[in-house]
Image 1 (tube, helix red, strand yellow):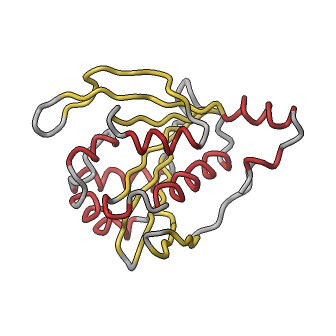
Image 2 (cartoon, rainbow, N blue to C red):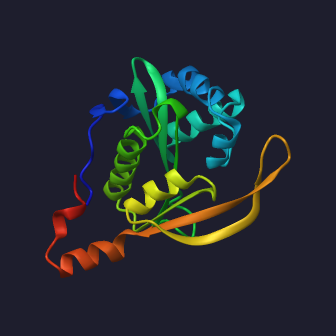
Length: 197
C-alpha cells in the first residue's frame, strides 16, 4: 500500500471543477484568506485557529518538516477546502494518523468535502497507516455522516473539549477507522483491491 498519489488531481463536483493539490508555502496567503472566510464554529473542526497568521506560519513549517501533509481544494484560484493528514512517527502511535478537514460553506453538500476526504484517506493508505481518527463538534452532522460513509465509527465523546471565541464550550466526537482490520477482512473475502483508488 505504498503507492504514491500524484497531484494535482481534478474532480468534477456540483460546485464546479475542483483542483486538489498539495499545499505549499506559496499558499499561505490563500489559505489564510480561506480561514478568515470560515464561520467561527467551523474553525472548531481544527485544533488551532487557521484564521490567525501565526498559526498558518507554524502550519507551513510543519508541512516543510514533513509532519503534516495538506491537500487544498481550489476552485477558480480560490481555496474552498483543506484536508490534512497529521502523523507523528516518533510518538507511541506511529501507526495512527489524524485527518483534519474543513470546506467553505458555499461548496458544502456539493461533493467537494467528499472528494477531499477520499483523497486525504488515500494519502493515509499510501503512508501505510493502520488507523485513522477525525474529530469534530457533535452538531456537525453532515461531516460526521461523510466520515461514517468512509467507514469511520464513533469512538469517544469529549465533553466541553473546545472553547469558541465567545467562551462557549462544545463537545467533540472522535471517529476512528481501523484500516488494517478492514483490509484484513477484505482480503479474507477476496477483495484486496477494493480500497485502492
